[in-house]
Structure formats: C-alpha cells, structure tokens
Image 1 (cartoon, one colour):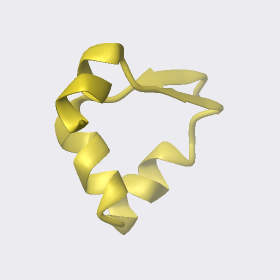
Image 2 (image 1 turned 135 degrees about the horizontal axis):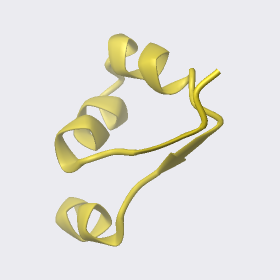
Image 3 (image 1 turned 30 degrees about the horizontal axis):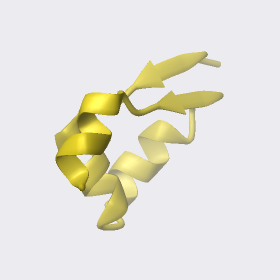
Image 4 (image 1 turned 60 degrees about the vertical axis):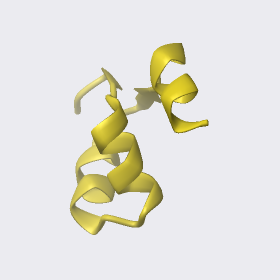
Length: 43
C-alpha cells in the first residue's frame, strides 16, 4: 500500500468536484497532502 502523496491544483479541483477516478486513486494512500501554494490557489 502506498504511503504519502502531495497533490497539485488540478487534482485538488477534480477531487473537490467529485471525480470518482481521482477519489479511487487517492484512496490508495494513507496520507494525502496539499501544499500551501495549492491551498492559496484554491481560495
């Protein structure tokens, strides 16, 4: 099982919009990180 992953803005947007493929992919990881830069871009 994979450990950690950091996501970029494009993936964060797809996840927040309910993309099931992204959800399925990210659910494999024990920890999903979102860098501060990505958070700022989403605001």
